[in-house]
Length: 257
Image 1 (cartoon, rainbow, N blue to C red):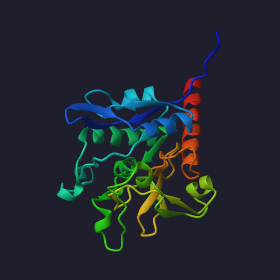
Image 2: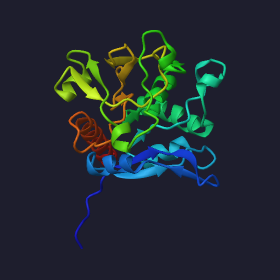
Image 3: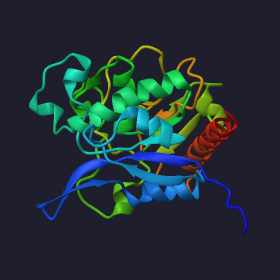
């Protein structure tokens, strides 16, 4: 029998939703699973974001890395010491209860994670930071939200440049100090959390790329959506390739222990 090499397992944090207004689901985007499997070279596994069903220690043992996806519900403002307002939008408290301690555990252990959009915001909150509930309402800021109409191609189209810290982790990974990305988010970083290093900004000053300072593992997170056209986009592909390499390294180290 031919031995089958083990691909790293990536836990994709799912979002709670409803199909047809009646059937509750824990779901993940197809393009995200395709990016994890096809570009990162890992096995995508959707994780139900419900602490009644899964516990953080179980997830840490099961997966080699985690992809913190985007999602319509926002992190509840009580997680960063603020009162809920209509501007904060909808919430997913089950996901908050899973992802925030999971991020902190991964930072401590050196286990890789990759944050996208809401995941980017979760990383900041998990490290003690806060969020603006609506970026477009701030003076001098642009509207970063997804266009309400159009095809997927039009909604995920490249919309603005992101400028990176010269010589930083993102600039080295991209081989460039400026790239062009899509933009599909309403919230954004207000106060950076402890050890959060901002390495990328939109033209209006909105933080778009972060990492956790002195963390032993992969902690890159972006405010845009690199899962769209991940295989063909020169900005998306290196992010998923580097994340996959980090997951393989973690899995290999775990096998040797």
